[in-house]
Length: 406
Image (cartoon, rainbow, N blue to C red; front, side, top):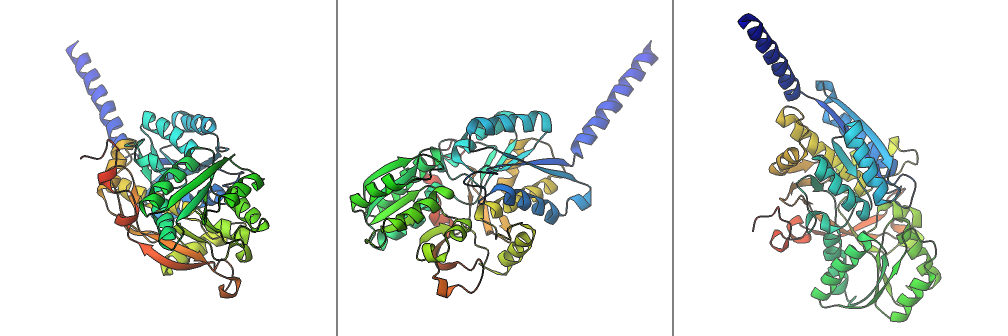
């Protein structure tokens, strides 16, 4: 009887020991690109974000070291319920470890709750709401690239200082638009400007005539476009038809991407000022990555800052996993480790992830070139100014995130 018990105990110990060893050496990762594949933000993220994730896997070198890394993708259709259902399915059934991109703030804020509940990870490069690392921060979320606070303080403050001291907003009627108008209002009033009014428009609107007429009637010096993607390009095109800029008002694209400028064309977009944290033609490293990216895109598009953020965020994640010696699948633990290590990659340069999950790096104020100034395809921007990371993102002293120790 004693021999039998001893044998059973030895057998159990071997099984547990084998399982523990396998867990410690687990080098299987699954990444889910949750994005807009067919709507107004498809060029901003979409298939390009999937490609960026695949390039990060290739460039990490982990697969050559025995890691198994898969990338899958889904269209959230800009609907929070679709985003959360997809994320639950991914984590519970598909065993997805990391959700990336997540364009659309309404979707991102909803998915954040699922990722936190399931102890997975969201590396968000697509959504803009600053609430993701402020009032609604999570130990499982890292917010890469940009947010509404940064956009407001860069573009909004700069335009007020340049004489644009009265504003009227055209605002997308969902979480992103509300956050961008709120943060820009705070930046404009702090800089000495005033808000004359605002009007909300439905997401993915095709007719902006009534909204633009209200903005025109306000006589505001700046018409702030608190929208993005197709809504922004449609607003700008229709504003030209109404002669808003010719009448003396200026348009402020509070969130614009290179795909938007490409869609508008330089004849329409010339002179626009806006903020980005990545541009393909910034330096030799950004040009090298962007050339490789463009060659693999069907439309030969250069990467947007969202797509660049997918690549950059995953590269830091991979470096962290390798340093940890394997994948524990403990999202909060991995994110905590990501925060301990300074970031440094060819697309965004040196930076860091703050305790609230906000990844910070420099921001660039650009002006769109005149057609005569462009030297070829995708040569669209002139650099107007650079703002250091610590000056453009929300100071931790102003944070209400409970992860930030006061």
